[in-house]
View 1: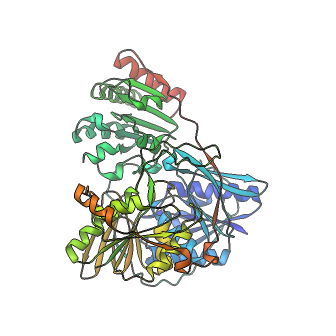
View 2: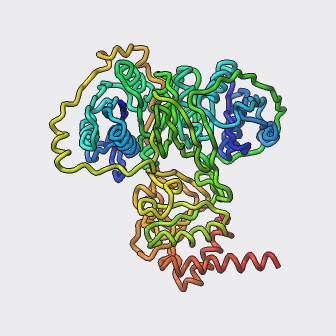
View 3: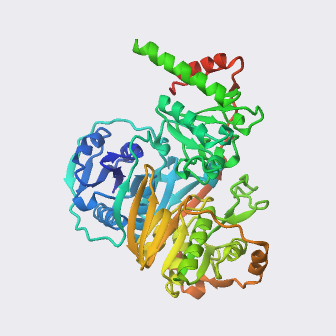
Length: 325
Length: 257
């Protein structure tokens, strides 16, 4: 029995949360006295092997083929199904991502297995494993067990910090006969220079209704760039059409837990707090001293964000100049 | 073109979540709504049938009576509503709901099945893919645009960094993401009309879902309410002073920048 980790890559880049899953899988395997095997699927992806080796898996299986260059549910499902049937693992770990939420339930159904998505804690009690996952967008948590022999689990990003480990890693190839899928991915459209991705970002700067208009996001983006941060938005800013829904943080948007979350002109509706309440550090800037966001913020500044944010930018730029000189 | 939309009745997203004395989720004072992602699916289905003809059917597989949500969908423009009554099935077991839906859908005539990408209550998002697997249909999840020409369907699927463009033929299963459309608000007249429509109720026994298909895959151990986050410090003084203090705290104390 072993632990299988599906190491997600897109565009030949490993997802950060996939590294976290490899590392968590290795740590669990050590505790349980099992082996950990990583499955890496794509086209010309052997360069990623060294990055994965740093986290100490016992084996890496490469499914490397031009037919696997783009993610397609049916082809990837066939690869994962084959790996699961060959290895018969007790646990299949994946980063909780759009891909995993498409792929994991399809394969879990095929092999008759239970699945828990978006887990934030794994508990071991005398060898019995259970998983804690948020429900109602984090307003509550539920601890659950999976009762099938193979257990599929996806792990939330930024919750399990990766640790490097040295193990002998064997690299093998997984032969998979691919067929033309019924749902064909024609293209992958990733805009260039968009900064870090929201769910995996260490720092997020978000704007809300307090910005007053769509142009206000220029200021949010400027601060985000200085911090190397991703840009988020509240539901009201998205519903007003100021920012694309891809940036929405909250119950009907993305759930994030960065090291630092900066909320600009965000009142702190319950749906928004549900999406960012597990951030390690929250900073709020808002005109309204009664705004709900101050009840969850570690640091608050009461004031007009159009006055306060330029001061922050000024300070950081001056610091940068000092360090450069 | 016949489209079947699988909907779930969920808690209002504004709801505060509390536990009852037994440690279960307290549903006594909660307003129920159509899961928001299914509202996008219903809207898209209505728009597609307005263009191509055909009917929209909404179906909900659940233990609790989903009439409130189904009537909302009827008021939006769905023509038929079905409740697959799953009796005592555990709420967490998407596979049991998927088996029930699969059994029923196999008796229906459809070109397209639409779901929401996830339910905002359990956040599990496994039902669409499980159902597509049971029905042996191609699937695309988190769809933010759909165009159908001569049976050829082209969709955009949201991913973390951007989107994918995917082409497939009908019949297929799609799950809706925010951004797909703006769901309509039904008129009072339509809301009143929807109240008169009979909702069909079908049990797992009627469907022939076997005992084997009702064996749970997962089990709930306990519910927990996370401790409320405590507010911290308001930084006073001039903006210059407050910002200097903030950056010092974030850098030296918290080490997050």
